[in-house]
Length: 108
Image 1: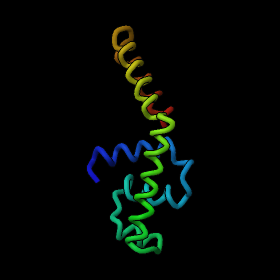
Image 2 (image 1 turned 180 degrees about the vertical axis):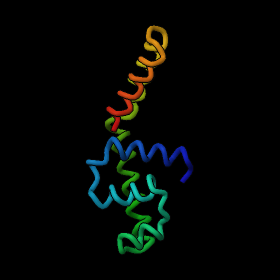
Image 3 (image 1 turned 90 degrees about the vertical axis):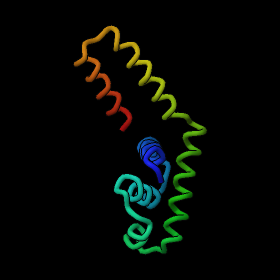
């Protein structure tokens, strides 16, 4: 998976993880956040490499479907862009950074 796809899936997982099963969450997190190989993850969970691949593929598809329907990440991006655009003209650099940090915390 390329870096852009990895970042996208990681973000989707942050937003929609509670909609996945615990095992789905763990497998996606192991693959995306910890850069685990399919073989390593399969060994960790005691399943086949193919089973890991299938679970990972289905889980990522679910995350993408949730975003397609709910558009939470898209809405967060719009809010983030709007806040940045507004604050760049009227706030100090420190105030801007504080707002950016607050938005990042809200995303978690």
